[in-house]
Length: 88
Image 1 (cartoon, rainbow, N blue to C red):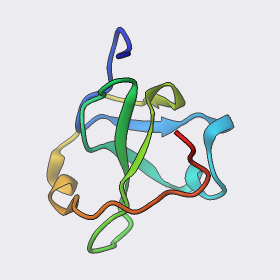
Image 2 (cartoon, one colour; image 1 turned 60 degrees about the horizontal axis):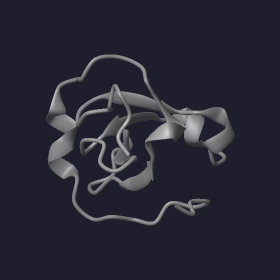
Image 3 (cartoon, rainbow, N blue to C red; image 1 turned 180 degrees about the horizontal axis):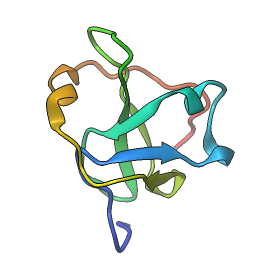
Image 4 (cartoon, rainbow, N blue to C red; image 1 turned 135 degrees about the vertical axis):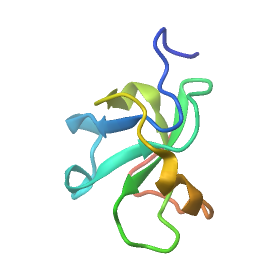
């Protein structure tokens, strides 16, 4: 199920407090895919990692914080790492 105003690739989002793991609030997050079936792939921005981790989360866990940003950070989206505390 996709929300009425779905999150799109490039949107900057924040994880709602009740779904954050320790340290999640220290990152800015960016959608690396469009919302699909109520889920979406996100990654932290500015980690300086050569391959930033990508987490698949429920779209209901997120809030869009602004309009899509430049997708310059999207070029490194490659490997998928498991994210702690996620049982989707």
